[in-house]
Amino acid sequence: PAHALVATRGFRGLGLRRYKRPTPLPVTLKFVGAPTARDLDSGAPLPAPRVGGYEQPQAWQPQGGAIPRTHSLKMPGEGGVHSPFEDPGAPPAGTPMEPDKQSPPWKVLRTHNGNLPVYLKVKFGGAEAFTQVRHVFGDIEHMRKALAMVCEAPVRVRSGVFEVRGLHEWKIKEWLTALGM
Image (cartoon, rainbow, N blue to C red):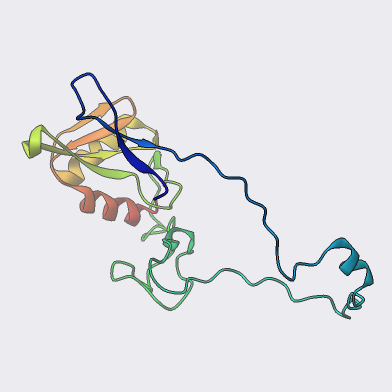
């Protein structure tokens, strides 16, 4: 065997077992049919360069198994395959549903993935749940009052993050999308 189990005398007798590495043996390897420097110099000449260059390497394509998640790189509206939550006839993000209506004095910026920064938070093992809205810039008090009217729930402002009591993620995202955020 490569490693042998050897019983050694430990603190409490022979119960301790350790692997003992065997002593290395010197080995010389000879490759059969391997070219040497002399063979390369006297062998057949290298092929001439091809007109038009050589084949370019192809981009990697998954061959099955786990497929990488690249949906965040896809622009909305491109491609014919849509997720069940994506409406192909909807206007692109940032377009208000009522363009003639005046825009509010605040703005909610989207995340780097293009999603709205609205999150559900649960505390005390589900006894307390609230919805957070982040990345808000502009008139904070105006946004707080509008959010309280939409959700019909109390809204707290904590260091630039809005906390709405209850589970209102879907409602807030629909409202912000309708405003063109």
